[in-house]
Image (cartoon, rainbow, N blue to C red; front, side, top):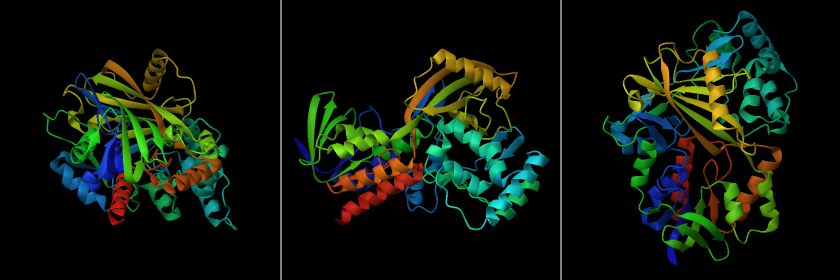
Length: 442
């Protein structure tokens, strides 16, 4: 048995950030053969695709200077250009602040309903996600985009979802700014992801995409044990058992354990977790993302933006990501990569790859995503699960109870999946740094 002051489960961004600060005081255990978690990038014959497209954006977090210093010239500022497609037109993201491009009827109805929602007295407290959207944006705008888009994302009744937990990337509208954005490009509203960054390493770099961030951070961590799958955790003994290439290995932590692995997995492997807490794991639901990675030969399209959201439920994908706009070297000079994202409940049975490809290609043609002078030369698929955690009123209570119980045994939960939340890359890195600093003080 090997002993260390702290053990960190998972070498995603949260775990790596904590390990970066603690250095020799911590050991990071990772089941995969490289660090990064979901922040990995795959190369298919010269076409690079992120597992799920992430844009690094900072909101006054103290980690900005740390990360920018680490990456140096390999990180590039991005002024994100995103578009939203609805049945009434095409507008800049976020749609509620950029109604110009929608039909006159849609603009007038949205503003009228929004004014009613703002003027409503008394203010109503939403009981669920559907009500939260309506109370925030008005009924017409919800019917136009918010309801169909979120039904497509979650594939669950919106009334069954909690009224909070999703809002970090939902911009609640100011009426004057909505009116401004309905007649001209909105110049006063600053979206949450405006301070964007994406890696652009040199042409001869062995890796590209957002994995550059994960690898650079991982290279600065003192001890990362790869191919170490945690199969058991004892809270009483403060021990972790791993399957490794050399057989079973037991590790002991003297002070604390940080778990960034999915909370349902942690519940499963905790050998001495009381049954009442084990049962809470049944309340934790998630959605998967099916990333269809399409390699295309031909001129790179202009004016598509970095990504586009599709509100119509008849279109299978939630968004398309035009990767050449993030880094021109993510594909050969005579081609470009298109990342297609489909979301669905993790518990649903998977369709065949052939069926998914067929539907995706048909819908790409319907929305004119690929110009006529371009040809699909390859298509690949990756399933990310869990990808989006599902919030219900019951799950929120369960997560808090689990966090409190684990904390009473010197185990902290962190990261999007570790503490079952919806958070950005900058946020989870900041949380990792903050947790590590709290350990240094103890």
